[in-house]
Length: 63
Image (cartoon, rainbow, N blue to C red; front, side):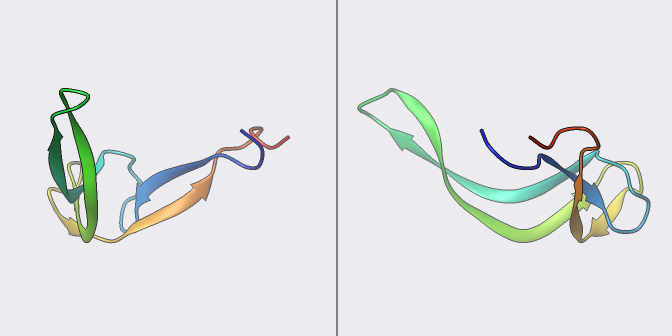
C-alpha cells in the first residue's frame, strides 16, 4: 500500500479507542458479514461519550 498511514482518534482526547456506527450485510456467497455502510456517528471509549473522529498520520509510516 502506497502513501501515508493514518490512525483514527477522538477529536477531544486523542485516544484511538473509537468506534463508528455501521451496517453489516450477510453475503450468502462468502458466508461472511460484509461492511455495507459506515455512518458519521462516533463514540470514544476513553471519554465515554459521542465524538468526532480525526485522521492523524502515523509517524514514520510514509514511503
